[in-house]
Length: 97
Image (cartoon, rainbow, N blue to C red):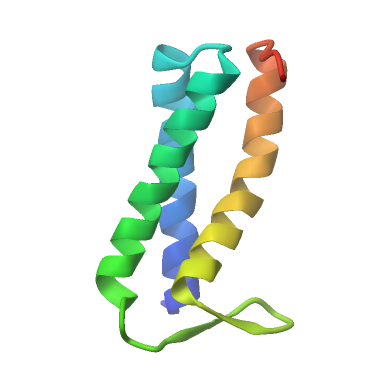
């Protein structure tokens, strides 16, 4: 399995656990709580990926260009999260500021 796919699967797993188990129980429809817990989820993802690739100089492909492990992790995390947040916000009537 490619390193890119491993990171994407990790991000998807973290976000699925967050949006289906943690956020409904601890954040509800409070945007600030969701944002804080989302920050924690992204730090967890960066910590796990960083423990493997920090200082390795590895580059990851984002189709048009190559980026470092940190940028790849953040960008793919965000791209996976956007539709999940949209769905969650509609389902739980999250009030956006």
